[in-house]
Length: 82
Image 1: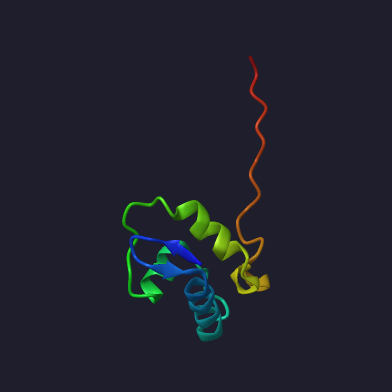
Image 2: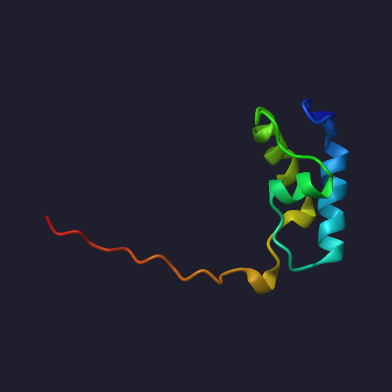
């Protein structure tokens, strides 16, 4: 299925790029920009982004590596006094 008509990117190409990036570096964070770059393309109009992201999320290799989860400090909840 064609995901991006401007750049003629198909869903299987997105999955292949994600799989390749994860195999190359298991701890990499994979973003849409990195997928475009891996495919040698760049986003054009952005109309495909919702479908592009949905396609990426379907890939089991997209998950953040276990050793990188939880590194961000928890957000503090401040109670505002009125």
